[in-house]
Amino acid sequence: MHQLPPKLWQFPLALTTLLVLSACGKTPDSTQQAPAPKVSVAQVIEQPLNEWDEFTGRLEAPESVQVRPRVSGFVDKVSFNEGALVKKGDLLFQIDPRPFQAEVKRLEAQLQQARANQARTVSESRRGERLREGNAISAELADARKTAAQEAQAAVAGIQAELDNARLNLSFTRVTAPIDGRVSRAEVTAGNLVTASESLLTSLVSTDKVYAYFDADERAFLKYTELARQSGHDSRGKSPVYLGLSNEDGNPHLGQLDFLDNQVNPRTGTIRGRAVFDNADGRFTPGLYARLKLVGSDTYDATLIQDVAVGTDLGKKFVLVLGADNKVVYRSVQLGPKLEGLRIVRDGLAKGERIVVNGLQRAIPGSTVDPQAVPMADEKTLAALERQRRSVASARAERSDEPLKVSLK
Image: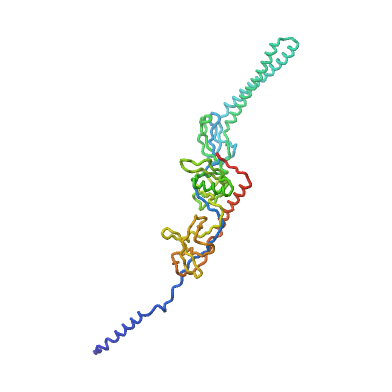
């Protein structure tokens, strides 16, 4: 076997090392530059609106009745389905009417007897007057006959009053619904003795409307009073109120403020308010928890952005604005409340400016991005804002045309 000379054996190794070093020494000039990241961008919008304050409250029925008997007796029959809707005048309970029927018949007989006695004494009184004129009887006897006739007439009136009361008590054996509404369960069943004005038979609540009671603090009350003064309306006027239940998103139900108490509670520093809502479909049940929104400002043109476009930097709020060259610019903003998913911007942005609404983590201030245009708000959101604004305008127009009618009880 032949061996290569030492120098020839080392040459291939040196050539390989040179090629590796040459490959590692290539510059990145020939590599392709990464594309600009894609981000969703929307234009800042401006809409006329009113700000709203949020409260919590409970629903109550405008009319709530505890049904009690007006006469004592034994219950003959329960005539309603528990939990059902009833109309005013519907029979709920029947109390045994027989004792009351007997009392009516007894007084009717007494009345007939008294009327017969009245007719006799009146006739004798008239005859006595004629006899006195002819000096056939003394004046004393004639006066006695006249007095007897008057006493008989009074007796008739007294028995008639007793009979009217007995007939009224007989009618009270039919315990009927005093209002339209939904009846609760029967507290007594047939065969039980009930006492007039004491025994609870059932309860009944109205359903056509519902009240939502809430408490506002002093600051909110003073703000509403000042807004009302500036607009020339009473703070107790029919301002629009929106309501939402615990299983609903937002506050879809529109009602009106119809009551504000006449003083602030010094112990709690709050004042009680009430809004009324239609409940013809029976959606609302007394006792439910409710979220309420009340008008908290005059109408003004507000700058609006999506809430997801806002970032937080050491407690400060910021957005990423795009310039004409699609470069990202960091900008601090002052924010207001959120309305229908949009955030009000107090300061820092103007209508028409483009901001990043999705992909903030990919948009680095100073870098260039590939903007993908999206709307700032959909038609449903804009329509909701417009409905709220019109509800305020409509309520104010109504208050201008009609005198204020507010219950303070």
